[in-house]
Amino acid sequence: MNILVIGSGGREHALCWAISASPLAEKLYCAPGNGGIAEIAECVPLKGTDADAIIAFCKSHDIGFVVVGPEDPLVSGLVDRLDAEGIKSFGPRAAAAQLEGSKGFTKDLCAEFNIPTAAYGRFADAAAAKAYLKTQSAPIVVKADGLAAGKGVIIAMSMAEAEAAIDDILGGRFGAAGAEVVIEEFMEGEEASFFALCDGTHALPLATAQDHKRVHDGDQGPNTGGMGAYSPAPVMTPAVCERVMREIIEPTVAALATRGTPFTGVLFAGLMITKDGPKLIEYNARFGDPETQVLMMRLSSDILPALIATHEGTLDRISLAWSHEAALTVVMATQGYPGDYPKGTEIKGVTAARAVPHVQVFHAGTIKEGEKLLSNGGRVLNITAKGGSVAEAQARAYEAVSKIDWPKGFCRSDIGYRAVAREQQET
Ligand code: AMP
Ligand code: GLY
Image 1 (cartoon, rainbow, N blue to C red):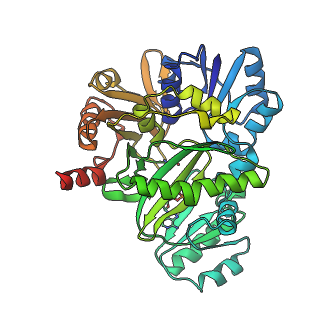
Image 2 (cartoon, rainbow, N blue to C red):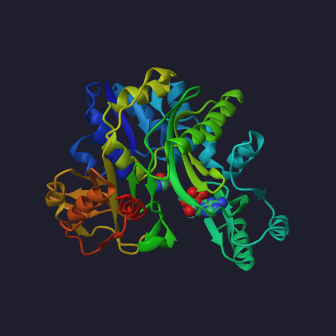
């Protein structure tokens, strides 16, 4: 069948790479894609949020299955529109994508169904938010309710900082995404990313991963979309994974089914592994970026039947095999990211990086201009490697990074440090 993947990041490159290996996939398209995806799929200049254009393209190109990567099209109802046209797709409808689209929605659901998460309050009014704040203590977390491209979360170290964040969010800094503010208890622990395919009724856990959200080494500096990831995450022991499924994922799937808004797609739980066990930080209604890059490196099964079974409600018939090897990805970003950065700077050395054994280079913000490869975003390349240990995958990834000749780029030099330290302790 012909497949259309929606999105333009490293996540979509990794998904296209995995899908293109499926015997079920005939022609692969990606909208809008990027400079790397163009090597394995035909890129088409359509926006994921332009449902009319996507539907017209699916009809004219005999698309049998659409895989939606990013959150914006999901939250704005692309899957609802595709369903109405009888076009099969992977991803939740808008009502279930509210798990990502509104932090308040998720917090209320957790409260109603006893899903472990941080204590919270949600407010549309600054005075009420500040009155609640007075009953809490710092550090405290202040969040814009809606989609804010990962920038709507402030970890306030003082009450003054928390008050300023409330004024900022409710004052319109994030537009409609800041119509409400969520104030949360600060949770301590180690973070992990957990993914489960859900077909409305069944949930199938995928491999675990850990992301590095801060821009600088040692987890310093502002939050980003993610500067690197590895899989598996040692903190996610089988016992912790089992608790996450039982206490968090399964109650969520059941709750949404009961409400008549079943979740179909991938449920991405951002977790804090606290001394009291795993707690939900937030849900995303899509695959993680850059976590997907390491998951696809480790997946030994064909992904496409699993994505289709997610749509058809037959996930109970699917089992996925994962490599016992570790995978690690280093994000190369344009200097300035996550603030302002230039576009159009030339990148060389990708072929040499790709020639390092056990390495894949997934593109995020790149564009081809003739023979030249140019940067076209904040996060630009994901240098991804497999190895017998996280340390080995890390060494291979950084060897490949050293082949990239891009004066305007930078990356963290410590991706995987927690897992590598654990491995060293064990030997
Ligand atoms: P989010 O966009 O909700 O995932 O938040 C971004 C980052 O802020 C998370 O990855 C955590 O590092 C941090 N964070 C969010 N909520 C909390 C919380 N309640 N306690 C501690 N850290 C948090
Ligand atoms: N890496 C975190 C995310 O995809 O939101």
